[in-house]
Length: 430
Figure 1 (cartoon, helix red, strand yellow):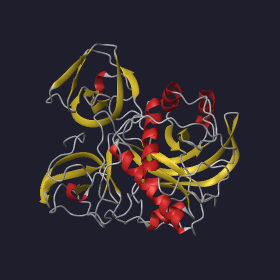
Figure 2 (figure 1 turned 45 degrees about the vertical axis):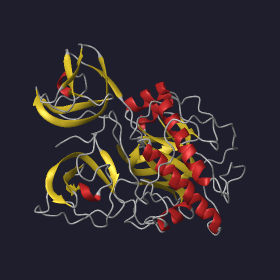
Figure 3 (figure 1 turned 90 degrees about the vertical axis):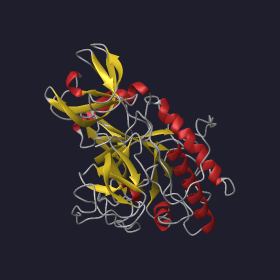
Figure 4 (figure 1 turned 180 degrees about the vertical axis):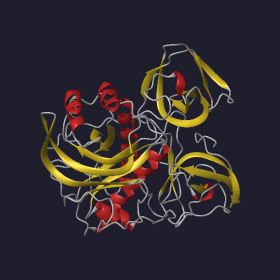
């Protein structure tokens, strides 16, 4: 993304997960961990080669941007990252900024980027999986949680080279499958005239795994997330798109000038925890209700690490329940979050997205085929952002229905959740 001399360092990869699994493409399995969620950001974002300081980010609260791209690793990462620490992540996210993790791994054999470390044709599948594991390690080192999206930065390359194109697709397919195996979402940053073209051409291919989100570079000054000339609007259609619409330039807010690229997003980003204290001794439960089993006792004034918020039975003035990093729940009424009647920004609502597996999946007003359908079904490969599951009309092998973040319902049979016969943890019951 940035025209800075590449500093090539040795890559030390620790094997922190299983090898890339055998799975059916283009949709591949994704299982989320207990204390995780996905976080969707909609709005303006910026990315810059070196992460700004906490003071600079504080000054940029005066800007229209509420997300920032951060380069978490990769053999082709161009700039040192002295600010990028767990403490920085905590401070910046508490301000309300979302984070977009970028991993600049191997580049195409036919890349137009000078001095790049390139993938090799025979080893691209192995390399894609290897670097996905390293990307997860780097994300975890910054306290980014499972359910986060990590974006592979694939710079512009010669699309006329068919061998190179197939190599890139194999690399990115392995990247996606390995991230899914480790409970993370897969994103790709690509030029609209190379990577985006090839990913769109392979969108429904049984040879390659489909990434969950696509972030294109097209410096035309137009921030629209639809109407892209090389990607149909029905591809990556539901909270799955980012666009870098303006390249390197300076902007100044709060007296601080940064050199940035400008982006618009409606896509998954990083998930973090937010620490608050409790104002009374409370219990944590295995689900968002006192009807669930008690899992622990939390003394007054203790800190709790909140991953996301959901709804449940009312206690005091609140129906909000907090999902903690250990996967248990506490009622929000006794936690010192800002809002005692609703959700408290910047904590996200609990949601687990999975790709849909058929085209024109009906969204219904309730959990069954007898309920009326909404006029806009989901295209194949869309993300179904599930907030909870419950029983309804049996479709195929399952009676499970998924309630989505927009309030509509879809049968779980055509959503790539782990089970096609029963509920898929850690999705809660409605």
